[in-house]
Amino acid sequence: MKKTVMIPFQTLLVIDKNSRVPAYLQLANKLIVLIQEGKMLPGGILPGTRQMAITLLINRKTVTRAYEELIAQDWIETMPQKGYRIIPELPVIKPRSFQPKNNFKSSDPHEQERMEIPNAYFNLDYNTLKGSDIVVNDGYPDINHLPYNELLKQYRKQFNKKNLKQQMTLRDDGGIQTLKQATCNFLNETRGINISENEVVITRGAQMAIYIAACLLLTPGDKVAVSDPNYSFADKVLKNAGAAFVNVPIDEEGMDMDYLETQLKRGEIKLLYIVPHHHHPTTVTMSASRRLKLLQLIRTYQFWVIEDDYDYDFHFKNSPILPLASSDHGGKIIYIGSFTKQLAPSFRIGYMVGAPAIIRKAINLRLMIDLRGDTFMEQTVADMINSGDLSRHIKKTNKIYAHRCAYTCRLLQEKLGDKISFRQPYGGLAIWVKFNVQNNIEQLIKKAAASGLYFISSIYVNEGDPNHNGLRFGFASLTEDEIERAVDILSRLVI
Image (cartoon, rainbow, N blue to C red; front, top):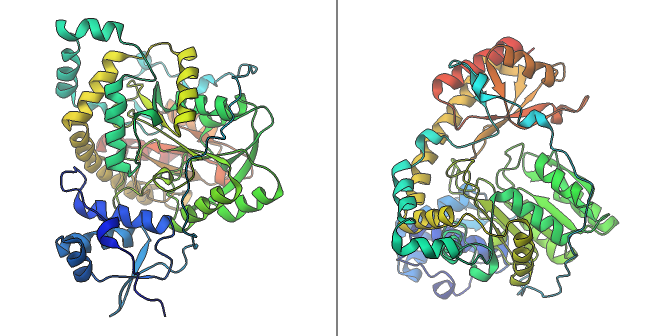
C-alpha cells in the first residue's frame, strides 16, 4: 500500500499572494512540477485537503480547487474514503537535478536551395469577396474583439517627445528590454517557466523563432522527429535546414512515445519538433503520462526539443496544461510562442526561450535577418502586458471562443454526422475535421468556394490515408451566423 507523500510541502509549495495567478492554480502547477521532477511518485497518496491547507496556511477551498484542477488534467485521482493519489499509471521519474549544459554546438547558418511556399495558402483576393462570402481560416483570433482603445492608448504613448528619440535610436539586443522583461514575467506567471531576460529573444512571430532554432541546431542530414501529420510550415523550415524526417504517429493522447522511443533506440535523432498543448493540425492535447515519458526520453537520449506553443492561453475544459519547458529538462527544450493568437495575425511579435548560450547565438542570427525589430509595437505590447490589459483581453475572449467552439461542434455533429469525424478540442481556435476518403478535399474546397465558402486553413491530403484527409476549421473569427452558413454549405457538398 502506498504511503502518504512525505515531503516538505511548506517550503516547496510557497504561494505568492501578490501574483496575478490564482492561488489554487499556483498550487496545482507547483504540484505538477513536483510530479514531473520525480519528487512525488505515481501511486503516492496526497495529504487531505484539510491537512494540506493547515500545512500551507491557506484556505481549504484553495486546496480543493487545486486538486480538482489536477484531476481534470489527469495527474491525480480520488479514492473513495482514502483521499487523493497520483495516477499510478504515470511513468516513474527518478529524482535528479538537471543543470543546463554548456556543450551546445551551433553550426553556422548554411545555404539551402530556396523552398517555395505554395501560393494556395495566400492566393485569396479579399477585394473580390462579396459581403455574404465566408472565409474559414487556420484558427485566427477575432479582430472585432481586439482591444483597440487600449492598444491605441499604449501606441500613442510611444510618440511623445520624451520617448520618441529613444525609441527611434534604441539598440536592438534581441528585442527591447522592456518587452523581454514583460515577456519573462508573463511566461513565469502563466506557464510556470522560471526565466530571466538572458533566456529570451523576441522575434517577428513564432515562424521566425522556428527558423532560427532550426538554423542553429541542424546540419544537413540530421534526423528530426515530427508528428504525422505535422504543422506544414514547420516542416518547410526543417526541410530547408536539411532535416531527414522521422515521422511519429499521433493519436488521441498526442504523439506516440513508445514509437518515438523505438526510433531513438535505432539511431541518433538530433531534434524533436512537437506541439504538445494543442497539436497542429489535429488540436490534440498530449496526456500527462506521455509528457512524463517524453521528459524521461529527453534525459536518456539528450536530444533537442522545439516546443511550439502557439495558442497556449486559449483552453476551455480546465486551466492550460503547463508546457514541457516548465519542467526540469536539462536545458534541452527550446520554447516558442507568440502574441499573435492573443491579438491578431498582423502583430508579428513572437519569442524564443532557451538556455543563455543558445539565446545569445539566436540573437546574433536574428540580427542578420532583422537588424532592428518594430520598437514601437514591441513597447506597446510590453505596456499591454504590464498594465494587465492583455490578461484581461485573454480572459474575455477565452469565454467567447469556448462558446463558438461548442457551437461549431454541435452544428458539425447535427448536420454532417458520420460524413466526418472530429473531436471537440480542449482549447485553441480551430477544429480538426476529417472527411470520409471518398471526399476529394481539393475538389470539395473548390466547390465550397463556388458557393461562397473559402478555406485558407491547413489542408492535409494523402490518398488512402484517412488521417490525412482533413482540414482545420477555424471557428474563432466567425460569428454564429457565419458558422451556421459555413456548416450548411459543407453539409450539402460532403458525401
